[in-house]
Each structure stands twice: as structure tokens, then as C-alpha cells.
Length: 152
Image (cartoon, rainbow, N blue to C red; front, top):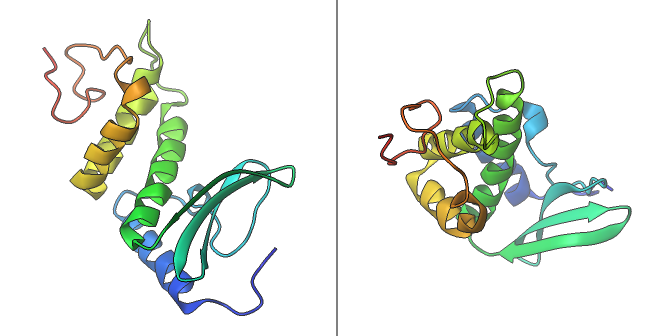
């Protein structure tokens, strides 16, 4: 479902998001659609009643909805999703660290968020602590050690 009349704020957000993502080489397919509802468990970004809206639909059912009047919030949501996509894509075909294979892709997410905005990295660490704190980061692997962590 596409908007009939383009929303200039939404178009500006999409341009800004792609400009930010260019700094980390984010591929177009990693972004959520803007102003278009895509089903299948994919996130969608929209603007309604002056608020940014982040929704995930699957089989016609709403699974998740977040709203905010703060553009930084929606950019953060976008780039958490984009960096997860990129982290997962990057990890394919790379060495997996046993016993915790999350190190490969989670480490890449942290690196990418740190490159984009240190505030987003810290927010992600706070909001995702329930699983990040369980990752067994290998010592001596700075490529996969989260920024600011002691590799020793």
C-alpha cells in the first residue's frame, strides 16, 4: 500500500537516512520502505498525525508499532535494523567464534552503530542488554570486540 500524495517530511527523512547510511555503505535493500506497508515481518516507516511511525506487519497483522515525534528516534530504529541486516550479511561466510556464534554478527552491528552515532551505540547497548550481556566475546579479537570493551 503506497501513499497517494508523497509526504515531504517522509521523503526528507528517507533522503537523510540514505545519506547517513552511505557512511557505512548500507545497501538499498537493507532499508525499510518509507510510506509503503510491506508485509512479511518487515519494518515500515511512515509519518502520521505529525509523528514518525515504525510498524511491522506479518500476514496482515500488526506485530509491532512504535511512534515518536523525535526524528532521531526513527533514525535510530532504522539504523538498528539496517545494521542488523548488514551484520548478518557480513557474518555469512566468515569464521564463526565458538561457543557463541553471535559474536560475528553482533560485533559488526556494534562497530557500524559506533561509526554512525556513539549515542545510538550506547542506546542499543542499554536497550539490548538482555541478550548482548550474554554474548561471550573472545579475548584478543579486536575485529569482533565491541567498541570500548577490554579485549584482554
